[in-house]
Image (cartoon, rainbow, N blue to C red; front, side):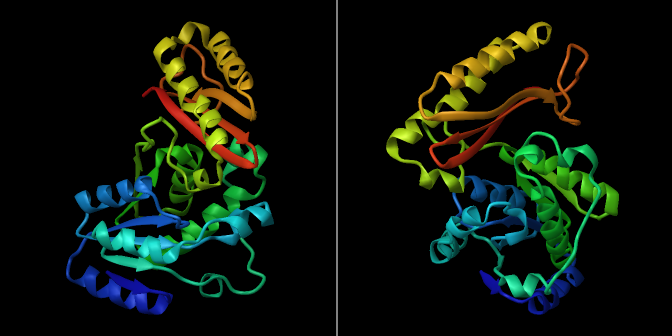
Length: 279
């Protein structure tokens, strides 16, 4: 695996691959890699000639400085995982390689920025679009792979690609779960044994909803789901919404694609999860 820390060296290397007609797949990450990330890489390897992964803990998408500070950064173990998974290239830049001093960014992505996650993490999606645009500009991938777990983030990046006419195909890959049902996340390491047990209420509730779902009683099913989560000790519900999979507006009987999205705090750890109910 080739490892690059500077934009210049990476772009020169990729230029050669492009000239040789190689199709480039890209998996941007914050590091602290787990099987979920590696499943994105496997998708890239399936569709592309060359797969590049980036590891960059992007400061502009953390609205809580403490969250940024404690975000795990096990780079040696990440490199080992990528090598074992057959990744071709790793881009692992420092902050000053990605950002100039006092850099400004604002992209009008409309109400997507303020719904659900946007409401609880103001400014988060500006940081996401800022760094993903930079990474797309450097890598110029043919395809980029993102996880369904960050469902709203995928919609935001899709919107950015449309607005800025970026020549990249986005692929949303299914959520990978631990054997007990917990969605894989770099944040799971912060959960105590007891907190982790309580966190399983997310996948249990989403699966229950999927099994019982019909469009005629969305409100009562949503309410029942909230009751299930609120009954779990140590779990603080932020939102549980059943929405249109394209707009994130509340779903109704006419809605074609429907997704349930949930966010909670378990102890000090914030977790999100979702399930596609109708696609």
